[in-house]
Amino acid sequence: MKKMLKSFLCVCTAMLVLSGCSKPKEKTKLTVFAAASLTETLSELKGVYEKDHPDIEIVYTFDSSGTLKTQIESGAECDVFISAAPKQMNQLDISADASVNTDKLDFVMQGTRVNLLENKVALAVPEGNPAGIDSYDTLAKKLREGDILLAMGNSDVPVGQYTQKILTYYNLDEDALASAGVITYGMNVKDVTAKVDESAVSCGIIYATDAFSADLTVVDTATKEMCGQVIYPAAVMKNTKLEEEARKYLDFLMTDTASSVFESVGFTALSK
Image 1 (tube, one colour):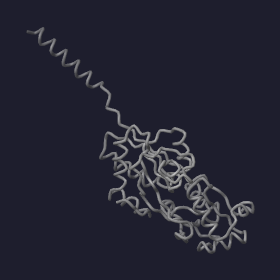
Image 2 (tube, one colour; image 1 turned 45 degrees about the vertical axis):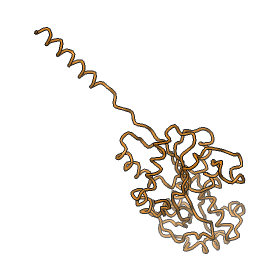
Image 3 (cartoon, one colour; image 1 turned 90 degrees about the vertical axis):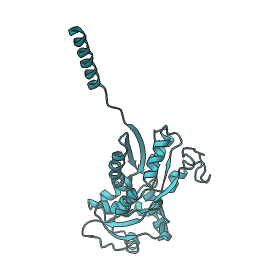
Image 4 (cartoon, helix red, strand yellow; image 1 turned 180 degrees about the horizontal axis):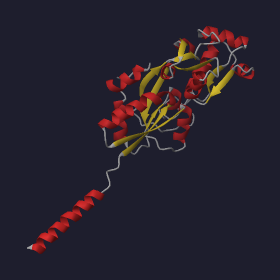
Protein backbone atom coordinates (compact mmCIF):
# COMPACT_ATOMS: atom_id res chain seq x y z
CA MET A 1 0.00 0.00 0.00
CA LYS A 2 2.83 2.37 0.87
CA LYS A 3 4.55 1.56 -2.43
CA MET A 4 1.35 2.26 -4.36
CA LEU A 5 0.88 5.58 -2.56
CA LYS A 6 4.52 6.53 -3.21
CA SER A 7 4.16 5.73 -6.89
CA PHE A 8 0.96 7.76 -7.09
CA LEU A 9 2.63 10.76 -5.47
CA CYS A 10 5.58 10.49 -7.86
CA VAL A 11 3.25 10.51 -10.86
CA CYS A 12 1.36 13.54 -9.52
CA THR A 13 4.62 15.39 -8.90
CA ALA A 14 5.84 14.64 -12.39
CA MET A 15 2.60 15.90 -13.91
CA LEU A 16 2.83 19.13 -11.93
CA VAL A 17 6.42 19.69 -13.03
CA LEU A 18 5.54 19.08 -16.68
CA SER A 19 2.51 21.36 -16.55
CA GLY A 20 4.62 24.06 -14.93
CA CYS A 21 7.20 23.82 -17.69
CA SER A 22 4.73 23.86 -20.56
CA LYS A 23 5.07 26.88 -22.85
CA PRO A 24 2.23 29.40 -23.04
CA LYS A 25 0.28 29.33 -26.28
CA GLU A 26 1.84 31.61 -28.86
CA LYS A 27 -0.31 34.47 -30.10
CA THR A 28 -1.28 34.79 -33.75
CA LYS A 29 0.58 37.75 -35.23
CA LEU A 30 -1.48 39.88 -37.58
CA THR A 31 0.69 42.14 -39.74
CA VAL A 32 -0.75 45.54 -40.61
CA PHE A 33 0.93 48.00 -43.00
CA ALA A 34 -0.41 51.51 -42.42
CA ALA A 35 0.28 55.08 -43.50
CA ALA A 36 2.53 56.96 -41.09
CA SER A 37 -0.26 59.43 -40.31
CA LEU A 38 -2.13 56.62 -38.54
CA THR A 39 0.65 55.90 -36.04
CA GLU A 40 -0.96 57.41 -32.95
CA THR A 41 -4.53 56.25 -33.51
CA LEU A 42 -3.73 52.69 -34.54
CA SER A 43 -1.24 52.33 -31.70
CA GLU A 44 -3.99 53.30 -29.27
CA LEU A 45 -6.45 50.90 -30.90
CA LYS A 46 -3.93 48.04 -30.72
CA GLY A 47 -4.37 47.80 -26.96
CA VAL A 48 -8.15 47.92 -27.26
CA TYR A 49 -8.25 45.15 -29.86
CA GLU A 50 -5.74 42.88 -28.17
CA LYS A 51 -7.58 43.16 -24.85
CA ASP A 52 -10.71 41.76 -26.49
CA HIS A 53 -8.73 39.28 -28.62
CA PRO A 54 -6.01 37.90 -26.29
CA ASP A 55 -4.94 35.32 -28.88
CA ILE A 56 -4.01 38.05 -31.40
CA GLU A 57 -0.95 40.31 -31.53
CA ILE A 58 -1.12 43.24 -33.96
CA VAL A 59 2.25 43.95 -35.58
CA TYR A 60 2.37 47.35 -37.30
CA THR A 61 4.65 48.76 -39.96
CA PHE A 62 4.16 52.51 -40.37
CA ASP A 63 5.67 54.37 -43.33
CA SER A 64 4.71 56.34 -46.41
CA SER A 65 2.03 54.60 -48.45
CA GLY A 66 4.34 54.48 -51.46
CA THR A 67 7.06 52.69 -49.50
CA LEU A 68 4.56 50.22 -48.05
CA LYS A 69 3.08 49.54 -51.49
CA THR A 70 6.55 48.78 -52.84
CA GLN A 71 7.26 46.42 -49.93
CA ILE A 72 4.00 44.53 -50.51
CA GLU A 73 4.73 44.30 -54.22
CA SER A 74 8.18 42.91 -53.39
CA GLY A 75 6.68 40.11 -51.30
CA ALA A 76 6.64 41.50 -47.77
CA GLU A 77 4.27 39.70 -45.41
CA CYS A 78 1.18 41.86 -44.94
CA ASP A 79 -2.33 40.90 -43.87
CA VAL A 80 -4.02 44.33 -43.93
CA PHE A 81 -2.96 47.47 -45.81
CA ILE A 82 -4.22 50.97 -45.01
CA SER A 83 -3.10 53.67 -47.42
CA ALA A 84 -3.28 57.44 -47.06
CA ALA A 85 -4.54 57.75 -50.64
CA PRO A 86 -6.42 55.59 -53.16
CA LYS A 87 -3.52 55.66 -55.63
CA GLN A 88 -1.27 53.25 -53.75
CA MET A 89 -4.14 50.85 -53.09
CA ASN A 90 -5.24 51.08 -56.72
CA GLN A 91 -1.75 50.14 -57.85
CA LEU A 92 -2.17 46.84 -56.01
CA ASP A 93 -5.82 46.24 -56.96
CA ILE A 94 -6.51 44.24 -60.12
CA SER A 95 -10.03 45.70 -60.27
CA ALA A 96 -8.70 49.27 -60.41
CA ASP A 97 -8.39 51.24 -63.61
CA ALA A 98 -5.57 49.90 -65.78
CA SER A 99 -4.24 53.44 -66.21
CA VAL A 100 -3.37 53.40 -62.48
CA ASN A 101 -2.57 49.71 -62.00
CA THR A 102 -0.26 49.69 -64.99
CA ASP A 103 1.56 46.54 -63.89
CA LYS A 104 -1.68 44.58 -63.42
CA LEU A 105 -0.83 43.78 -59.81
CA ASP A 106 -3.27 41.58 -57.91
CA PHE A 107 -2.63 41.90 -54.16
CA VAL A 108 -6.00 43.10 -52.85
CA MET A 109 -8.51 40.50 -51.68
CA GLN A 110 -11.64 41.38 -53.61
CA GLY A 111 -14.67 42.26 -51.53
CA THR A 112 -12.64 43.53 -48.57
CA ARG A 113 -11.67 47.00 -49.71
CA VAL A 114 -13.34 49.93 -47.94
CA ASN A 115 -12.88 53.68 -47.76
CA LEU A 116 -12.09 53.86 -44.07
CA LEU A 117 -11.28 57.50 -43.27
CA GLU A 118 -11.06 61.02 -44.62
CA ASN A 119 -8.40 63.53 -43.59
CA LYS A 120 -7.61 67.17 -44.41
CA VAL A 121 -4.44 68.64 -45.88
CA ALA A 122 -3.32 71.30 -43.43
CA LEU A 123 -0.92 74.21 -43.61
CA ALA A 124 0.94 74.15 -40.29
CA VAL A 125 3.39 76.66 -38.86
CA PRO A 126 5.99 76.47 -36.07
CA GLU A 127 5.55 78.12 -32.71
CA GLY A 128 5.15 81.88 -33.02
CA ASN A 129 4.66 81.69 -36.81
CA PRO A 130 7.71 83.92 -37.48
CA ALA A 131 7.07 84.04 -41.24
CA GLY A 132 3.54 85.34 -40.73
CA ILE A 133 1.87 82.72 -42.93
CA ASP A 134 -1.88 82.76 -42.34
CA SER A 135 -3.36 80.98 -45.37
CA TYR A 136 -2.56 79.05 -48.54
CA ASP A 137 -3.00 82.30 -50.45
CA THR A 138 -0.27 83.90 -48.33
CA LEU A 139 1.91 80.83 -48.77
CA ALA A 140 1.64 81.08 -52.55
CA LYS A 141 2.53 84.78 -52.46
CA LYS A 142 5.57 84.24 -50.24
CA LEU A 143 6.76 81.28 -52.33
CA ARG A 144 6.75 83.54 -55.38
CA GLU A 145 8.70 86.15 -53.43
CA GLY A 146 11.19 83.46 -52.40
CA ASP A 147 11.66 84.46 -48.77
CA ILE A 148 10.30 81.39 -46.93
CA LEU A 149 11.04 77.66 -46.68
CA LEU A 150 8.20 75.19 -47.18
CA ALA A 151 8.43 71.55 -46.09
CA MET A 152 6.47 69.04 -48.18
CA GLY A 153 6.45 65.30 -48.76
CA ASN A 154 8.34 63.57 -51.55
CA SER A 155 6.47 62.87 -54.78
CA ASP A 156 5.97 59.18 -53.87
CA VAL A 157 4.27 60.12 -50.59
CA PRO A 158 0.51 60.87 -50.63
CA VAL A 159 0.87 64.10 -48.64
CA GLY A 160 3.50 65.18 -51.17
CA GLN A 161 1.16 64.36 -54.04
CA TYR A 162 -1.62 66.40 -52.45
CA THR A 163 0.85 69.26 -52.02
CA GLN A 164 1.80 69.07 -55.69
CA LYS A 165 -1.88 69.52 -56.57
CA ILE A 166 -2.04 72.58 -54.33
CA LEU A 167 1.02 74.07 -56.04
CA THR A 168 -0.59 73.39 -59.42
CA TYR A 169 -3.80 75.04 -58.20
CA TYR A 170 -1.78 78.22 -57.57
CA ASN A 171 0.14 77.87 -60.87
CA LEU A 172 3.41 77.41 -59.00
CA ASP A 173 6.34 75.56 -60.59
CA GLU A 174 7.57 73.04 -58.02
CA ASP A 175 10.89 72.37 -59.75
CA ALA A 176 11.67 76.08 -60.02
CA LEU A 177 10.79 76.63 -56.36
CA ALA A 178 12.93 73.70 -55.28
CA SER A 179 15.83 75.02 -57.35
CA ALA A 180 15.38 78.41 -55.72
CA GLY A 181 15.75 76.78 -52.32
CA VAL A 182 12.29 77.59 -50.96
CA ILE A 183 11.11 73.95 -50.76
CA THR A 184 12.58 71.14 -48.69
CA TYR A 185 11.31 67.55 -48.71
CA GLY A 186 10.38 64.89 -46.16
CA MET A 187 10.33 61.12 -46.59
CA ASN A 188 6.83 60.88 -45.10
CA VAL A 189 4.32 63.06 -43.27
CA LYS A 190 6.00 62.48 -39.90
CA ASP A 191 9.27 63.78 -41.32
CA VAL A 192 7.56 66.93 -42.59
CA THR A 193 5.76 67.35 -39.26
CA ALA A 194 9.07 67.13 -37.39
CA LYS A 195 10.59 69.89 -39.54
CA VAL A 196 7.74 72.21 -38.61
CA ASP A 197 7.79 71.21 -34.95
CA GLU A 198 11.53 71.91 -34.77
CA SER A 199 11.09 75.32 -36.48
CA ALA A 200 13.47 74.18 -39.21
CA VAL A 201 11.07 75.58 -41.84
CA SER A 202 8.64 78.47 -42.21
CA CYS A 203 5.70 76.09 -42.64
CA GLY A 204 4.77 72.61 -43.76
CA ILE A 205 1.91 70.93 -45.56
CA ILE A 206 0.80 67.91 -43.55
CA TYR A 207 -2.41 66.21 -42.48
CA ALA A 208 -4.69 67.88 -39.96
CA THR A 209 -4.45 64.80 -37.75
CA ASP A 210 -0.64 64.95 -37.61
CA ALA A 211 -0.82 68.63 -36.72
CA PHE A 212 -3.22 67.73 -33.91
CA SER A 213 -0.98 64.95 -32.59
CA ALA A 214 2.10 67.20 -32.69
CA ASP A 215 0.20 70.16 -31.18
CA LEU A 216 1.04 72.37 -34.16
CA THR A 217 -0.86 75.46 -35.24
CA VAL A 218 -2.92 75.01 -38.41
CA VAL A 219 -3.56 78.25 -40.30
CA ASP A 220 -5.51 76.80 -43.22
CA THR A 221 -6.86 73.56 -44.69
CA ALA A 222 -7.06 72.76 -48.38
CA THR A 223 -10.42 72.54 -50.13
CA LYS A 224 -11.54 69.70 -52.37
CA GLU A 225 -10.98 71.99 -55.37
CA MET A 226 -7.34 72.48 -54.37
CA CYS A 227 -6.26 68.86 -53.97
CA GLY A 228 -9.27 66.54 -53.99
CA GLN A 229 -10.48 64.45 -51.07
CA VAL A 230 -7.99 62.76 -48.77
CA ILE A 231 -9.39 59.23 -48.59
CA TYR A 232 -7.77 56.36 -46.69
CA PRO A 233 -8.69 52.98 -48.23
CA ALA A 234 -8.11 49.74 -46.34
CA ALA A 235 -8.16 46.13 -47.50
CA VAL A 236 -7.14 42.59 -46.65
CA MET A 237 -4.25 41.43 -48.79
CA LYS A 238 -4.85 38.49 -51.12
CA ASN A 239 -1.77 36.57 -49.97
CA THR A 240 -2.70 36.59 -46.28
CA LYS A 241 -2.70 33.28 -44.43
CA LEU A 242 -4.97 34.82 -41.79
CA GLU A 243 -8.02 35.83 -43.79
CA GLU A 244 -10.53 35.39 -40.96
CA GLU A 245 -8.38 37.29 -38.45
CA ALA A 246 -7.64 40.04 -40.99
CA ARG A 247 -11.32 40.49 -41.82
CA LYS A 248 -12.25 40.70 -38.14
CA TYR A 249 -9.59 43.34 -37.51
CA LEU A 250 -10.79 45.39 -40.49
CA ASP A 251 -14.36 45.10 -39.21
CA PHE A 252 -13.15 46.40 -35.84
CA LEU A 253 -11.68 49.51 -37.48
CA MET A 254 -15.21 50.37 -38.66
CA THR A 255 -16.85 50.09 -35.24
CA ASP A 256 -18.02 53.03 -33.16
CA THR A 257 -15.18 52.34 -30.72
CA ALA A 258 -12.50 52.72 -33.38
CA SER A 259 -14.30 55.61 -35.09
CA SER A 260 -14.35 57.62 -31.87
CA VAL A 261 -10.56 57.30 -31.58
CA PHE A 262 -10.04 58.32 -35.21
CA GLU A 263 -12.41 61.27 -34.93
CA SER A 264 -10.82 62.48 -31.69
CA VAL A 265 -7.75 63.57 -33.68
CA GLY A 266 -9.57 64.97 -36.69
CA PHE A 267 -10.30 62.07 -39.01
CA THR A 268 -13.75 61.60 -40.45
CA ALA A 269 -14.84 57.96 -40.17
CA LEU A 270 -16.48 56.91 -43.45
CA SER A 271 -17.51 53.33 -42.70
CA LYS A 272 -19.02 53.32 -39.22
